[in-house]
Each structure stands twice: as structure tokens, then as C-alpha cells.
Image (cartoon, rainbow, N blue to C red; front, side, top):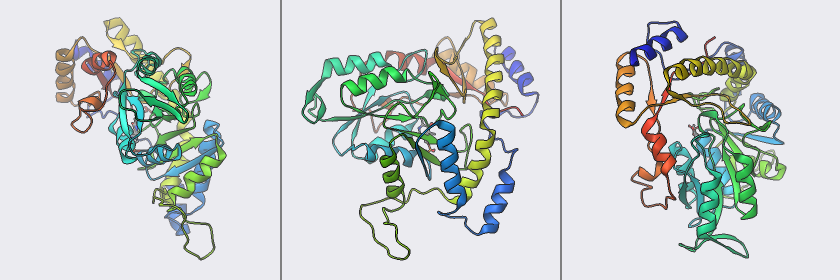
Length: 379
Ligand SMILES: *Cc1c(COP(=O)(O)O)cnc(C)c1O
């Protein structure tokens, strides 16, 4: 069975060499724009590619405003600050996520609370969110509080795992009912839509990552997207040391951050964005081939959830149990095919093991079985 799978992956990628999980693809204007950027000498924090990249991502996603940052984690940190998250407050999120989500929450001094995911989306379950809030929240004049800890529940951060949208409209409705700010970790889901609306735009603010392993990359980079113009302007300000605009004076009105994306990274981003739709079509074809193959074998393959359009950033299969998963990981990696298990869930990490975790049955089920398989664009 494992041999059948590795043989199939080899035919899909048409190679006997090492097959990575996800490699970047540069076949458009990347070199041209990079050279142009170097020739201009504006390689650092100001330059026309920065403005262009922000404008183009705003247009692409349909956001009113987009603000580039040095990486996705810093974008998330800024998003939380801009939503008013403060030390000793709580932020609801999913345990099944990449560490960056939860680290960004910790940078604000707030405490994460871990909710479960849905099996069909791999992202935050509206039922888990509702269940937790029904059981443990109380409303006060200034918002929602956790009855167990008496801390304010300031924000909720769902994540669109592997590019597959969560049931975000339902989550947005619940957050709005309980007066909790909604921030979407759309790090993995540029190009993915839920009911025809781009992920990241259902709450107050969303973030995207352009790290090297993502569907498009700027080397390292991130972006906030929002329909709140004022929040966007504040994000830009905070990301640039909160420096007031002036031709020569140094004047700052907040403790800001140096979270700006350099122009040279933005140049790469502009070129990558030009190819994003082609990448997504290509990845959806790949997912379709995988899906047919695995369904014939009776192995679970993760499909885009109903009502959504996924960028299929990383493909995933679900094996029988932990033993089967581990055997498969060993076999494929021994045979020069890169596969990876899911991230260790956040509630099992030393730093976060004492945080409140609300009934994580699906998280544990998926952790034991899921394996990511090669997903690079084939062009
Ligand atoms: C990649 C990623 C981020 C941000 O990562 P950076 O490497 O800082 O750009 C955040 N959350 C999730 C879920 C991610 O996959």
C-alpha cells in the first residue's frame, strides 16, 4: 500500500529524485522586478514595490486596505494590538494550528484558550466556540468575560488550515453576538474564499503570510488585510515605529514596532502575486488527482469544505491510526518523498499545557492520523 502511494506521487511529479513537501516557484517577473529594485537603490523599507504590493493584494482580496509586514507573525501581533487585546485578557483560538498563532497572542500578554476544530474543515468549530461561550462566559458592560477566570475574552482567532476555509460566517456571527473581536489567521489561505468572499475579511482584520513555504512567498513577509480604513492606517503607523509623518523630524506617538517589509521583498511579492491564480488552478488539479487516487484506495483525503473555494496549499491524507501514520512517515521519508505530520497541538506544548483546553476530541483524532503529502505547484 505504501509503495503504491509513493509510486503514485512519483508519477504525479514525474521524477525519481527527492520530492519536497512544498517548494516555491519563480517563473514570472521575479528576477526582473528584483533587478529593477536593486538598480533603484530602494531596497529597504520605502519604495514603489511596497506600495504596489499593498495595493495589489488589497485589489486581489477585495480588502479596503492591506499593510505589509516583515512576516505573518508580526502581522498577527499588530492585529491583536489593534483589536485592543491587552495583558491578562483571553483570546480564543484553536489548538490545531502552527505555533505562530499562539505566540503572537502571548506577545500581547494575553492568554490563549484552546477550542476544538471541525473534522471537515480542520479549523475552529463554531459548535466548540458556542459550547464554550454558553458554558463559561458572562457579559459585562465592557464585553464578554470568562466565568472561570474573570478575565475579559477580547478576541477570537480562527485559522484556515492548509488553505481550507473554516465556517467563518457562523464564527463571525457568534463573535458579534458576544462582542468578541474576530481576527482571522489567513496565513495559509491567500486566494481561498468562503461563500465567494476572501478569507481574512469576515472579522475586523485578517493576516496573510508570505513565508518561503507558503503558496506565494516574499522570502519572508506578511500582510494585514482589513475593510476598516482607520485600522489599516494605524497598522501602517505601528509597523513603522509609530513615526509621525514629517519631512525631517523624528517624532513618535506610540511604542511602535519595526515590522516593515523591505522593498526588495515586496518586489518578489508583486511578481509572485501575478502568478497566484495560475498556481491555485494548478494545485486544484493536483488535489483532484490525489483525491481520485486515495478514494480508490479507501484512504481519507482532505477536500475543500462545502461552500468554499480552497487554494489547496497543502494536501493531506488521514491514515488509520497513529501507528499507521508513523509507519507511513518513515516509509515515505526513507524513500525521498517528504511528508510531515500535523503540528503538535498547542495544548500539548510545554509553554501552553496549562492553558484552558475545551474538549479537543477532533483535534486529537486528526493529530493521530493526518499526514501532509507533496503539494508543490507543477509547472
Ligand atoms: C505561516 C503561518 C503564520 C505566519 O508565519 P510567518 O512565518 O511569521 O510568516 C501564522 N499562522 C499560521 C497558521 C501559519 O501557517
